[in-house]
Amino acid sequence: MAITVVEGKLFNGVEVANAEDAKGGYFVGFSATVNFLCVDETHPASLVGVKYSTHEVNDTAGPRPPDGHVRVTMLVSGGPWRQRMWSEDTLASVELLLNSPGDFIAWTPGLLHQWWAQGPATMVTVTLDQSASMSCNEPTAAAAVDETEEIGPSENALLTTYEQNWAHVRHLEAQRTLSMNIFVAVLVAVIYALSRAESAFFAPYALCVLAFFAGVNLLVSVKTEGIINAYVGRSVEITKVLQTSQLAGARVREGVWSKIRLGWIYPVFYGTVLFGSLVIFVLWCLLKLVCSRG
Image 1 (cartoon, rainbow, N blue to C red):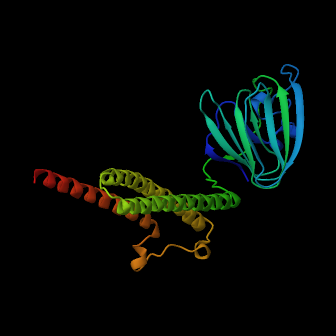
Image 2 (cartoon, rainbow, N blue to C red; image 1 turned 180 degrees about the vertical axis):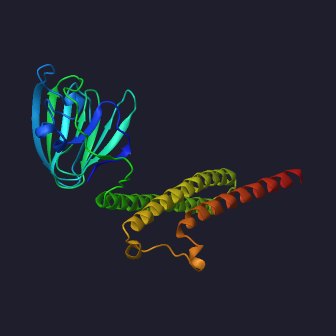
Image 3 (cartoon, rainbow, N blue to C red; image 1 turned 30 degrees about the vertical axis):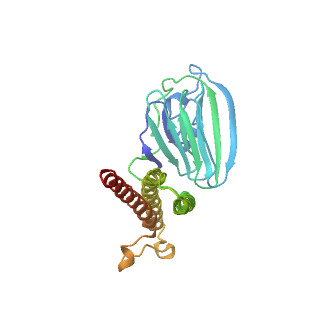
């Protein structure tokens, strides 16, 4: 399978190939298929290190800061291996998928990178102290790169996102329920205090305070409902991608309940309190005006 460009495109300083394309397998050396991996008598290089590593599914690291070394990361077995490369100077970026043993990514100094193991993978990374150079010999054909295939998120990534979406929804539900309880407690306390007061002097001020907090909570509740709907919508899309819509369930789309959402209770309640407070305040002002003229 060809090395896949998931996002962006290859740019100067990032090359991909397969070790089998190099003559005798010397992907770093006199027969390297990547220009800046050419090493011979006229193009010497200092070996900084060779790293062998094994990774489980969903292992990840980065972003790794740029340095002054040339690096090669090769998939030895397993995979796929997903890696993103980008430049802070030019803003160029590319995200690649190594699918087959021998597939590698090579990059020059000054680039950032981040990687994800999308399957159990064994990797080898070679680090050289060398500046980019011209090819030692005519390079052989580079590994085929498929720039048309779109690779979406892995199933594990989708499941993780699905769980996070519902965690956010539960958090928002708990927040607005707590806000409702506090507001109702304040409302009941204000109504009780006004009913026991001997004078109506504080009534207009209490109504203004209630109207203000009801208006604020109304705006917040409408925004919260929109955010919750967005998270739910994303979760529904994930179930479609995973083909689990029937198992996950769906919203009612027929009958009267398709038109009624329990989430509307919050904005309707705050809107009612806001409207009622303003109406009573206006009536109180009119009554005071009439009494003063009488």
